[in-house]
Image (cartoon, rainbow, N blue to C red; front, side, top):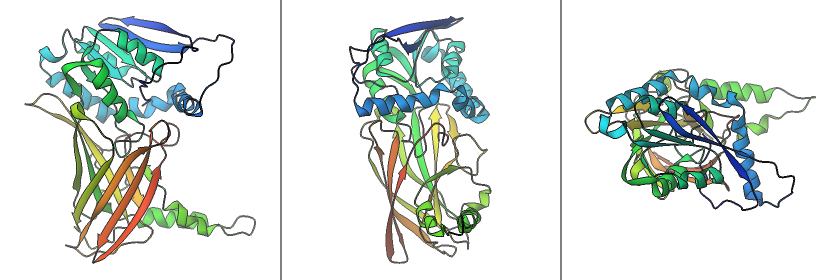
Length: 353
């Protein structure tokens, strides 16, 4: 989902507001830049940010999210489980609204006003001019939770646009890691790079292929070769520094050889008595969020009961904070190896976690 920018807006840009009203839905704000015919200078970072948001101009980029019935049903359950005092008659802010379906679901649940914001610093300025929200909702999670930059947007929106003590949904995010066996995918990739081009071999490129994270759905639940380790439990009402150094310990549950790790996440919403949980665990029904797969340069062969342990570091990267730097330090049988990855987030190239 696009990032809600909260940086000061350039005075040289002129924006206008289009307001869409529907039954139960007020203040659904979309901004378009108005052509002035004048050229204005811009920094490379602002140009990069604008290019990033333009990826979402194509409605098809939102289709995987809209067709994710598991996620939609989880939101429905969460809104149903909330007591009337949390939504009915309240002001709700949807951060990174995309096509606006979550905002409209909140309106259906009885919200008095729903402000849906998306994609630019200017719209954040508009949001600041409206009454502060009682509830903040967002489909914020990306691969590894951080990809896409929405976690940073949630922290800023909570600080600037939410009433003190306001509700944030999802209320909690968790990140998990498992060792997986994925020889079939690696064998297929190796076979593809072994095919010569004009009599030339490109097989050495395979060494770089394994250094790039993949966002995909595991084909078999049996690929999970270790127990699942809970890396992170994060309250969205208290998101602060987005640089995580996390330890993991995953006992092996099979005789297979895990040569990769898969990161999945869960999102929790609802009140304290009842909780609706959305998960991208590979053993759960598949969703458009999929899993984040990190390949090791070499396979690690383990026996049942062996333990994979180590550390994982994640932090936002790039001027827009939508990419993620990942470092994994793996310790097994007295040996330690460290591998670094760069997860480049793209609305067109891969779907959100």
